[in-house]
Length: 264
Image (tube, rainbow, N blue to C red; front, top):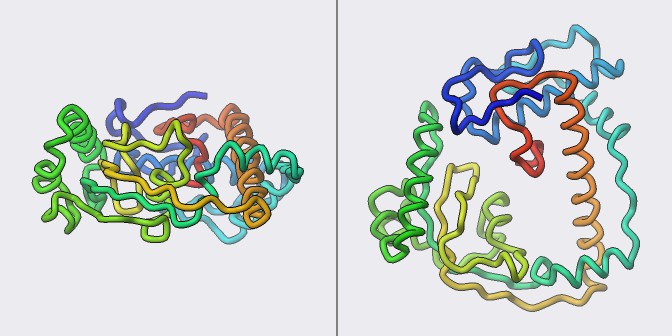
């Protein structure tokens, strides 16, 4: 597969095979580029297997036809096999990831938001966010000062302070980075990487964690099983995308950097 990382490549078209998805990949976020490229790979796979008409219109600004969406769902159902996890597997996962099934987990956090707004230069915005991350990791005591200067969130007037948060208080993609962490990854301090959300790029510092109360296995067994199904599905999807990217060349984004290009 030939692919290019947006952080170093500059302005390039986003393309899958002969289909142009965007004139300038840098005009989109990396998550948007991955999603568009991944869906186009699946659309072409559906056409190749006779699930979608060859003359199906190409997507416009990331929007595909209803027929294409239905054909992709059918292709995924036929090609991604997810076995049902047994109780022993669920119990092992539950024991290894206790914080994922705690009740009442909270974090006290603050952030610096670099908002993605229409017309913003996403590449330049990312560079600013990455520099801010480096600065506050080197000097955490300056976090409030940097937030006041750079953050696009109203919390900037309080040094980026968000107070105590539960997962329900956050956008799902933000919550994934803060909650349900295992002991080895439950960071307190400035998180080592930018957090991506629908609002933009965040530099985040966790000030305190309240792990909440562990729930009995019998209460969360269905949730544990669903988590295992999702993990297997994501792995199968990643393998499928690698195979498809070997058939239809992808330009303008690196699909390998995402855990799941369709779940960003």
